[in-house]
Amino acid sequence: MFGLYTRQRQDLINSLRAQSETVLRQRSLEAERIRADERSRLANEIHDVVAHSVSLMVVHAGTLKLAATDARTRDIADRIRNAGRMALEELRDLVGVLRRGDVAPLSPAPSLANLGGLIEESRTAGTQIEFIVEGTPRKVSGAVERTAYRVVQEALTNARKHAAGAPVRVEVIWQPSCLDVTVRNGPPVRPAAPEFPHSGYGLESLRERVNLLSGGFNSGPTDEGGWSVNASLPTGGGGQP
Image (tube, rainbow, N blue to C red; front, side, top):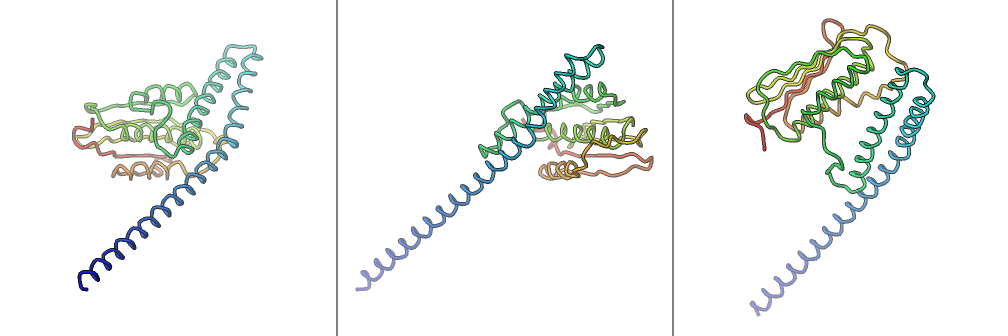
């Protein structure tokens, strides 16, 4: 009788455990389905709202290039069109990630090797930039390279928005155990263009990126009336393969 009771009790426990695991799996699947639906809805909204406006910008820039009578205007229109196409490509990548729910980009991710091109684009747009690299470059993780690139990209964008005409200094310093990226701009020379939106999310997004790498991030006004953005990204001494 005792053996029969023990077996029945164990069978009941196993049955309850199996039911509990089934319920947990069903809840997890339902939660993932809800998240996937929300990602898809968000991706569709981003595509419908942003892609439409950027596409119009590309079309108008192409029309302006054809109608322009001087080389400078044609060159500016061509640069606007190319920038719009790049924005549409990045938007396509982002929408694809949201819809698939993974984190793999559809195009090559930006890296430290792309910083020169990024800075040259800003120089062409009229920003005076001093670019300094110190220390011995070494191989680091893709996350560190992408984050460093985004720090410089966002800081240069903010300088164009809020410090029109101000000179900018970009420093990439290789320390023994970290990579220091600093972007400083002087005070604005002329009023900022009113068409630039002020979202306030760019710096917070950078802070989150850097925090995920256990790095340090600081941004704020300088004594000269400009702005400084600094990120210290751990590289683990020799970086990661």
